[in-house]
Image (tube, rainbow, N blue to C red; front, side, top):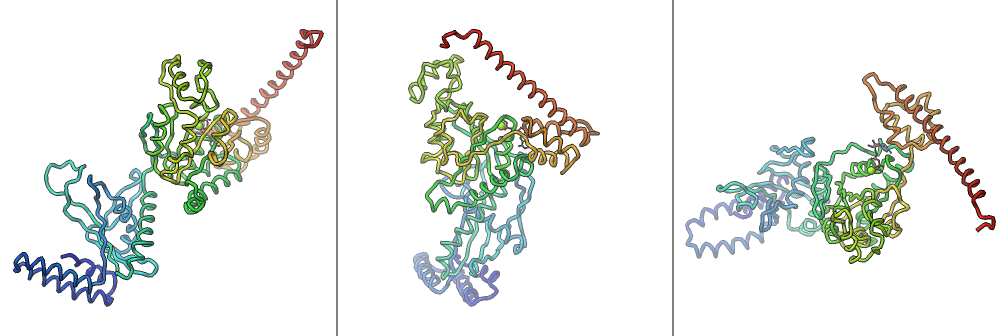
Length: 496
Ligand SMILES: Nc1ncnc2c1ncn2[C@@H]1O[C@H](COP(=O)(O)OP(=O)(O)OP(=O)(O)O)[C@@H](O)[C@H]1O
Ligand SMILES: [Mg+2]
């Protein structure tokens, strides 16, 4: 029987509206017909079925849509089904009597969904709709290991009044799928991907870094947080202005100033996956494009130490050894690879290949992606690579000054102030110590470790650095004077 469900659903959720009563009558008729048709000859049965269904369509005002768990030739799990399952989870917790529970996020949190043959109602713009879950026998799935027996697959059935057709097919289903995907996305286990030439492999991403514990100037930090959040919420804005929904960040600064830590903090803030792209492992521009297409949305694509990965300044990593080869052209690149004295398979990714990766047509597939480059030497990068529009935001991570130190002291020692703070603050302004160096002094060194021991160790290191710096400056002065003397002594009297 085709339309028994809406009646039951309407009654359970609707609280006895006129259509539901009408539905009960129709259901009764359908039941009688189901029995009666057993006694009719096949030809007559088909004829009566056709016309009775026409009649029912006319008098029965509900429409149903079924979303099957498995779809397509290969019977893959349907995205729509999964989104609906997630969307209905909150309604299920308040309305359903039987629920299913499952562990997600590496077994760290529990999600519930409605069990089979349960019903819940939903409201959208004041309109009531009904969802029912069910199971049915299905064709054997491609991934099934069992040799015999029949597989079961789930489905969700949405029931609504035919007057709401436009609302349901338009805004309502869009809302359900968007919300459902968002909930599913929030519940997923995040991944850290790395590449091997043209394919990605992944591990679970569980880095504890966050912006609260990142030591840097608080106002700069806040600006970055705001920028990231604005980006992640601005899908419509990007669509309106006709730009791909992506943003480039260039993080630069000396080693140990928190560039990699900031990337992890960004991923944790936005709940994104990370694709850590190792450019030197990519064979050519085609492989690079393939990798790009394989990335998912809501992710950060990272290229660390971009200046070391490729010759993006006109010289490859080993270019000094093959100086005679000119840059840019693919054939020359190939020559250079051949001349590689180490006999390694050099990457043939070119600057133009990388620029295409960043903002060529392919770069817009997927959407909602951050592209982050890090470097210790911004001055070595080709200006075309880091111009605004490609790398929209340039973030300088620098040596640890007092404001950043206070964040570290709070994180590591759980203190906001201390008599040594003034002294440390002055010293930090005079010498360049990276946050990584400072953090090392604040690490617990023994079980009986206390705040004083850590701070004194830091003061000692700062004073040593200051003495070394002063000595270095004196040394430089001496060298300068000596050089002057040398020039004076050995310079030609004519002055050429
Ligand atoms: N700004 C910071 N705030 C908090 N911790 C930091 C900061 N900078 C560095 N650290 C600490 O120092 C360690 C090294 O930092 P990180 O790897 O982020 O530096 P980096 O800038 O990426 O260095 P490199 O240029 O060598 O890759 C981190 O594990 C972190 O604990
Ligand atoms: Mg790093």
